[in-house]
Structures are given as structure tokens and as C-alpha cells.
Amino acid sequence: MKIIKHAVGQVPNLELVGNIDESSDFGQIEVDGDELHVDCYEVARINSVGVRKWIIFFNTMKDRGVRVFFYRISTALVDQFNYIKNFGAGGQVISASAPFTCQSCKKMVLLEKYKKEIPTTDFDRDLFNCPLCQKKTLRFDDVAEDYFFFWRA
Ligand SMILES: [Zn+2]
Image (tube, rainbow, N blue to C red; front, side, top):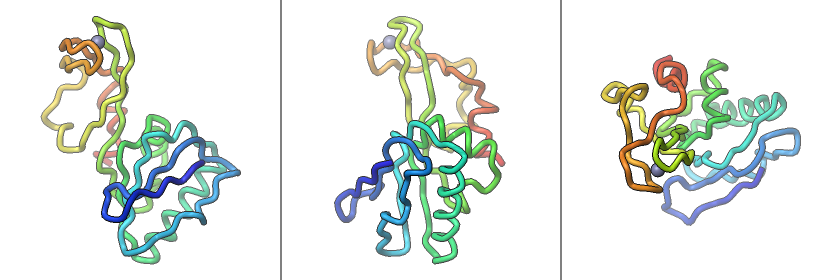
């Protein structure tokens, strides 16, 4: 896992990249201030040791009074948020990466989706704009009720 720190004032101010496992060191994360905005777009995989480290770290943040916000959580993390209660340790998921496939160009793309879109969008039926071929032929690859479950729990 690589930790990329963004410039002061930028949101998200931190980016996690790669796999979260026994080699991941959350202790490297510097927290200045009382908010942590974490971009999780490039978290490829997380194993059981990684899950434990993740939960311990974010619980520590909660105990220290740091408010945590997660952005673009990857599909691997969406699974954890759905399966493990309190995976976010009280942190708020601002947006999630969601998998779509284009019926025209046949490419798979990940789009950033926000909680506010969930009640007003029929992800299982609607077609979305493809950022690659510009046609409105993008279809959601999962079942909305399952994939976005963590936002309703
Ligand atoms: Zn396309």
C-alpha cells in the first residue's frame, strides 16, 4: 500500500494505492487537523489482515476525534463496507466507484457515484453516458440494491 499525500487544502488530502495486507503500514499516515479525506480509488485488494489493520486504524482516528471521509471507494472496499458492519468506523462514504459496461464499445468503466444519486436513479435499468465512446449505452454491472447496500445500512 502506498500513501500519497496531497497538497495542503486539497480534498481528498490523502490517497491509498495498491493492496492492503500484512505489509501495509497505516502508521505512516500523518494526520494534521481533525479531518481525514481519503481517496480509495486505487485500492486493488484487501485481505483479512488488511481488513483488521484498516479497522484498527480508523477506530483510532475516531477515538482521537478525527472525522473521516472516504471518496471513490474501490469495488474491493465496497465489498467490505457491505459485509462488515462498522468497517468505516464511523467514517462517512462520500462516493463509490461503480462498475459499468458499455453496450457499444464493450469497454468496462468505473464511474464515481454519490449517495444522493441512489434514490433518484434506477441503476438496474437506466443507461448512462459512456466516457469513452460518448454514447448513452453504459449499463451498471451489478445489482444496485446489493452494491450500494452500505449506504442504506
Ligand atoms: Zn462506450
